[in-house]
Length: 247
Length: 247
Image (cartoon, rainbow over all chains, first blue to last red; front, top):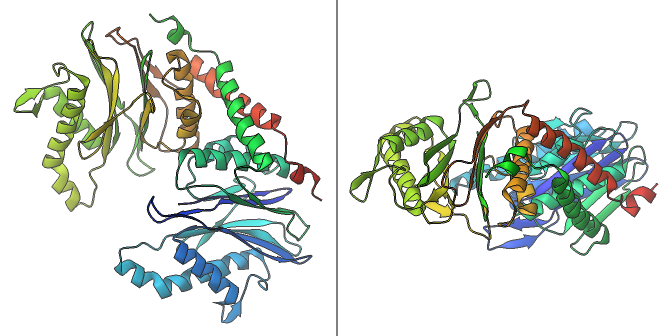
């Protein structure tokens, strides 16, 4: 499995993904699930993938070589808007389904893939999309500024409680790392290292592209600090009168 | 869906379940998923259920009337040990499968149910089991003192991080309520009110059986206090140098 989360905020965009893939629990590998395309001053896009690795690698490979959209061959380097970028990724997914779907089905393997496509092109604000295995997609908005793929449930409460469109990027990094850390602790199929990409609105270049491993100093601060803070927070809550006093 | 969690600790046992059932998202009802049997001074058992309501109600109904186990009719009021109680619940599940499984399958409905069975009988310590839809089961141990059924992922990180066999019951109540609150906030199919049962080791009676609604004073303390504490905790973590300083 996988866990990837994308945050589309006033200050910019953050994509974070783990790197674990597994075929069963006894065949675990490290593959990056975060790709990006950068034309400094003109566009910057990131892509996170979840699902069957053969499918998601095929989608990315197809995107690299050009996908037919509205009768012409396009790539993420030349689509004019982020909406068209999401359409292009959807078209790539549909092309791979057309190519592989039946053969997978004959082996009783579902066509399992989902993708986050985030970035900024020209004068548009940063935008973030979640593309489904059917090639259709939804877009994050100020009301719901984050989208998740893969093992999304463990890391959702911290985002539901604390993230808003106006959360500063530097604060959002903390929340995303806590969300990932909670997932990694509770689910073996999500694992370190993780890949992070951050871009600031209107910079039109990658601000940060980092691989974060277990010994990463900042991740250690978050991991240890968050654990201690959670413990202190629950210890500070009063115990219920009825549980203390019962006998 | 449903979320129920059982905690089997040195001091005693806690069962907590929500009360929402849904057939689709447009047909939501309140049903208690927590039942108990009490023979003061002799035994106390609680049962939490998740899955198809018709199945879980049939299992509970069958348990009330007596289930055939090893050639004789038994109920939770007369099984000699908690292990036999778990076997009895498993036998009830299998009996309902035998009765309803094929008809459900013909309607393309899976035989979806899981149960927590916890309690204490006589001189045995409190024990907690998770019974699967196949009627087989696992038991909580000091290494993993909690078991969950239903929508378990949202509320798992807080337990993974903080709960141990030696956590006092009064503290465990907080963790269980936070676990439930996180689930309710992130998943519409889990909803208030919740039902709680607590028993202290060797008391052989129900210590607390409470229905906790939205306006419950202690739940309000936990809900509001936890939200504030989480926010303070993540605000107190330093932002990464590279996210602050990038430009």
